[in-house]
Amino acid sequence: MTITKATLDAFIDDHLNEQDSIRVEKAVRESQELNTLLKSIIASRDMGDHSIGAIWRREHLSCPTREELSSYKEEALDPQRIDYIKFHLETVGCKACKANLSDLICTKNSLTNPDANEKHQQFLENSKILLPKKV
Image (cartoon, rainbow, N blue to C red):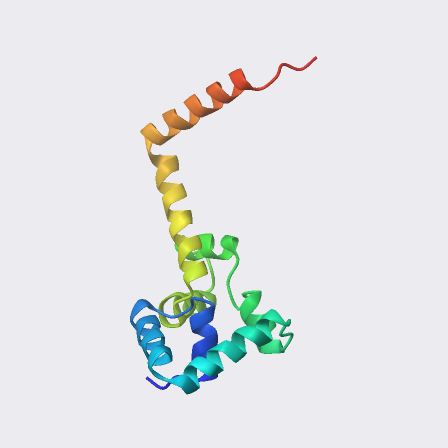
């Protein structure tokens, strides 16, 4: 694995998979040159790096919305968009989108689980007791 500036950017943003993160961290510890480059990237970000690439990564502009992820989960998108989201999740390995998709799956599972619905109702009832009465 060749460690480039883009790799270090992905490392800082926590966009690498676990094995690649371990490799980068080890390489940065062993190489003064990589350590210096990593520090300069962090410093430029702290000063407000406003390059197109930095903004793109920081704002997750290539990430699908939660609505798109929900539609992806239900296979309710056109095939090209499904392919892109699959690529984004599996090849790029976007942790933010994986977490969003996981949350959507858990939410759906909890809504279809009678125990979760009962707990939700109990929570709402208990909340009503704690809220002040309207005048």
